[in-house]
Image 1 (tube, rainbow, N blue to C red):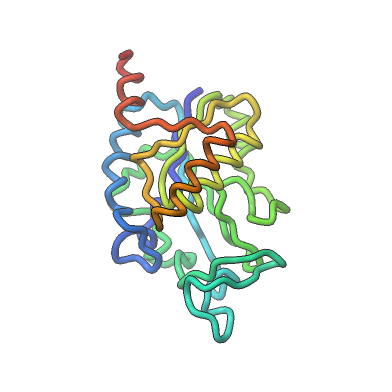
Image 2 (cartoon, rainbow, N blue to C red; image 1 turned 180 degrees about the vertical axis):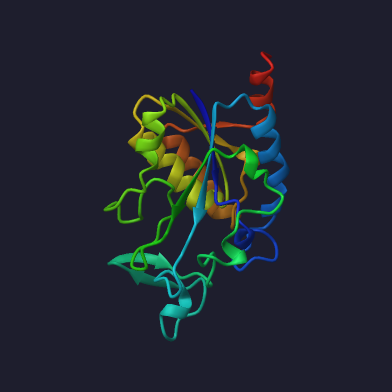
Length: 212
């Protein structure tokens, strides 16, 4: 059972959004093609879905500015601009993403007191989203992951997938992903590799699906 996991392909993380990742919208056509031609049995998308006043927002910390460091639930926390607030256009999946091909949407980041980069669990690891159980129940054996942003939510999701889905082949789809900063992207790619996540490109996945 082969699954594609699309991480946070939302308006808020694309140009014009409140926390835009450079080139974030460039991955949408790649996602659509992989859903169409990548040979996947299951497609899942994660969606940041924050309440108003979420603790990761700089606006929730008097005197703090976006991208400064703060603390949340006893852990160091990058303080972000308000983004992906539930039921807003900023939180919507990108309008050019083919939603008809997505089988399941996993919302995350809904606890005001802790952030959730990973699609699988909160940053303090105390609460799971339920995605690991969902994939286990469906017998997923291969999981390809890509989206926004490489150096935060994609990295966290890929590493958690290895940890929480024993025996599943996990791959990071490099050109299906964009990151915030070249330095932290490089660190993220090394961390994923060290955790046992392989790196692949969309062209290789499409060739595999064609039997090449």
